[in-house]
Length: 180
Image (cartoon, rainbow, N blue to C red; front, side):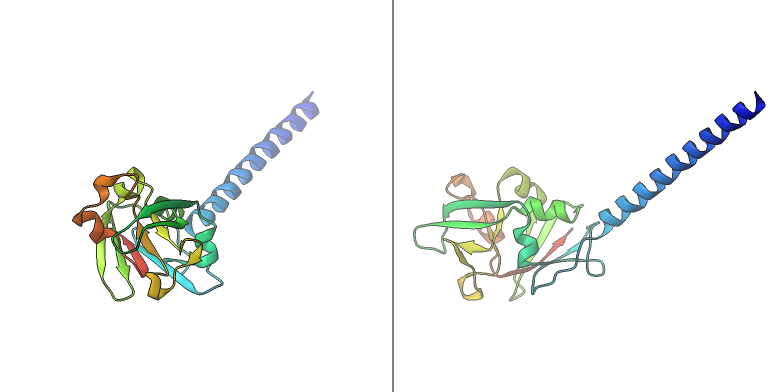
């Protein structure tokens, strides 16, 4: 009887230890995953800083083209004051970028190559399908075409967005965003 009780006790202790080890391993794995993702292998086209939890270069998240293409993509077909006619823009949803870095803030400061900056409320990215366009009519946006990234709102879908306040948020030649 004592031998059988001892065997059950050992089994119980082993089970508890294995369960504890599994929890510790899962916690470490989650913490590692939640704090970093792979560094870009191509040319960096977007730097994200500020109040973010998930990073890959120091305390920032850097994205190359392939990394941005791996995020949830969206096509916005709209006219803009800067283009003739209707254009089909494609790129990651702004909210997909915010979620990829686990952003925590109320404002997204968007900075262009020429250091022009505009602040966009985080709510804009969830209230509208705002994208960081990487292409227009199927062609990659070059710097001369307002690229490599261009903040595009769905102006034709929601005509009330076509106002001076929103137009100043439509930053082109985006190089960096800072979550505030």
